[in-house]
Image 1: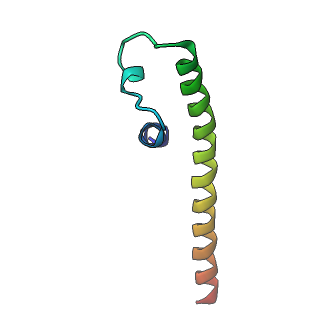
Image 2: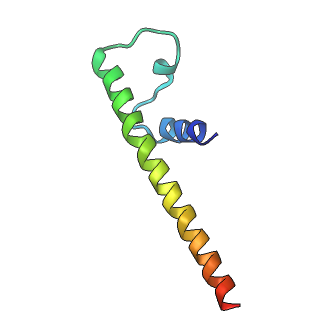
Image 3: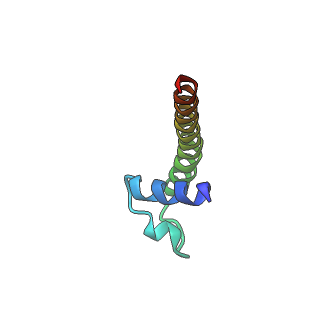
Length: 69
């Protein structure tokens, strides 16, 4: 589930339109394929780290509020 949403976000924020990459056409050059693979490899883990850190922060805040009550 998360990986699908990350992929959609990556496609939306990618500097180049990826429609021709996602279709069955051949790549216009090897650099486009390398760019796509490296971008996905970098964006995936960064988004995972970002989401997990935000979730942990929210959990800690909820626990802290319960302790105050």
